[in-house]
Structures are given as C-alpha cells and as structure tokens.
Length: 164
Image 1 (cartoon, rainbow, N blue to C red):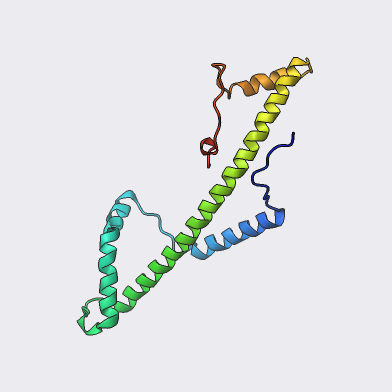
Image 2: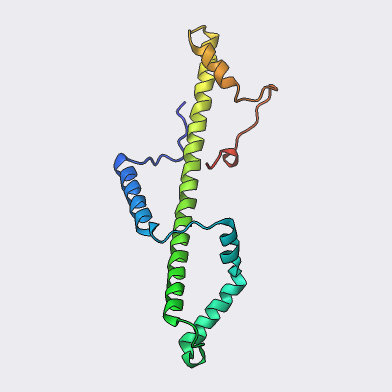
C-alpha cells in the first residue's frame, strides 16, 4: 500500500539556493535601517496605535489638499519621507506575512507526510520484532516512548501536526 503524499511538491537544490540568496539580499538591503528597541523604547514608540494612525493620515490629507493650514514648525519633507517609508514597510510586511502563511501551510503538509511515513515505519518495525529480526526491538523500544501507553490510540488530525 503506497503512502499517501499530500504535498508532493519538493524543493530542488537550485530553488533552495535561490531562496537563500534572495533572503540574504533582502536582509542586506534592509540591515542598515534596522534598530533594536529596548522594551522601554518599544513601549514609547509603539504608543501610536491604530486610532492615532488615522490622525496621521488625516494630517497628511490636509497637508496634501490644503498646505496653507499646515504648521510651519514641522519639516514636511521629513514627514512625507516617514509616511512613504511607513507605507513601504507595511507593504513589505503584508507580502512577507503572506509568504509566511503559505510556507506554514506547505510545511504542515510536509510534516503530515513525514508523520504518516514514520507511523508506517513504526508499524513495520513492530511487525519485524514479532519475526525476531535483530535490531528492531531496540528501535521499537526507542519509538514507543512517543505513543500513548493506555492501549488506545488517538486519531491524529492535520491540526495536531505542529506548524513549527
């Protein structure tokens, strides 16, 4: 009976290298802009919250539509640069989050396939113990620590397979 392979999409060495190279390029391109924030700084700078972002957007709208109403005490070129950077970062985050979700889904499928193969191998090893083939008893003893000892088995669903 062949194993059910739910994913079947495996990465070639060239694909793995291309992804690694691309991630390195992204990390390198962004590294000079990154700052580590202390917990205090994170609390202070993170206090903008969603409601206050609406204020930022409204001030930006007024600046664009009626610049004469804007405070002369603000460096509006810097303000616009901050807005542009924020918009860029938000777009990148959205794309990366989408990639992470897709990768997690893909990994879950590979985890499930690996787990099913491991269960089949464990069952085979238990069979071989019964035929007194050398080496299998140690393997079964080592693997048995991962299984329920009450004599009943739980059905494993895809939701119980770790996404990590």
